[in-house]
Length: 149
Image (tube, rainbow, N blue to C red; front, side, top):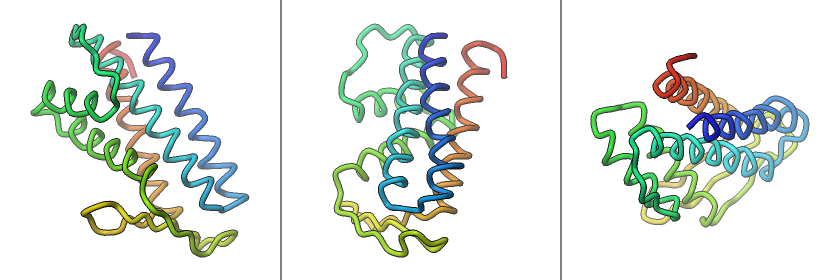
């Protein structure tokens, strides 16, 4: 469990760099996509820790199955439910059609055409929100499993 949490923290450190250095200075759609990937990877490592915490031996290899199993194992935990939904959305972002506007400016936004859903607009402010939610989730999981913050 501790190893999975350490890996999640390492992924989050990479996301931190993308958020506060790369995105700040380059402001491109590719950086937003990289940030989505890193946040998703951090959440994925937290899921691994949750599997070990629950003592589940049959861990699905498919990320969507992993998230759905975690959702069913923690039905009353709103933080976990919310992050699994965000993780599933991040997974859809990878394979969806994307359109970038306002590159190299503060108005940068990446519009993602999600299948059977409204388009998702990722901009600097929304990525800051996702970043903060992931940071809070990481602390929550660390406290839940290791008993420390």
